[in-house]
Image (cartoon, rainbow, N blue to C red):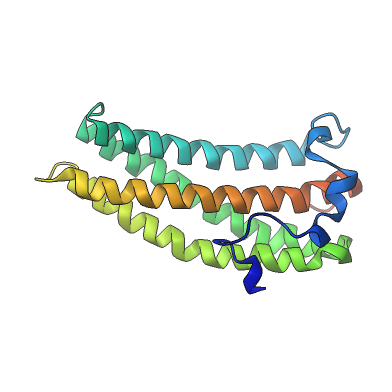
Length: 188
C-alpha cells in the first residue's frame, strides 16, 4: 500500500470509489439518510478544517505583524489543543467503533479501512510534530526573534492542513456512501 501513503496520494483509487459512483457528493445533502449521523460526522470534519484554517490565518497574521504576540500565543494554544485532542478522540471512535462495523458492511472497500487506519497512525507522528512546533511558537512569541518559530509553525500547518484535508476527504468518500446506503444502525 506504499502507493497510497497519506503524504503522496491524490485520492482514493477507483476500486475504493465504487459506492461513491452511486452516492456522489453532490447528492449527499438531499439524501434522506443525510441528517443525523452523516451530517454530524461531516460537521466534525468541517470543524477540523476550520480550526486548521484559523491557526494558519492567525500564524500568518502574527508573521505579518497584524496580531499581538500574546493573542497569537493564546490562540495557538487554545485552538491547537482543541484540534489535537478532538482529532485524537475522533480517530479513536472511528478505529474502535465505526470502522469495524462499516468494514463488515461492504467487502469491496475493506482495503479502504486499512488505508484509513494507516493514515491515523501516520497522523499521530505528524500531530506530535505540530504540537512541538506550536509549543515552540508559543514560547517564542515573546522572545527576541518570534518570527523564526512562527515561520516553522506556518510551514508545518500548511503541510498538516494538506494531509488532514486529504485524509478527511478520502474518509468521507469511503464512508458516507456506506452509511447513506445502509443507514446508521449500530453506529450511533
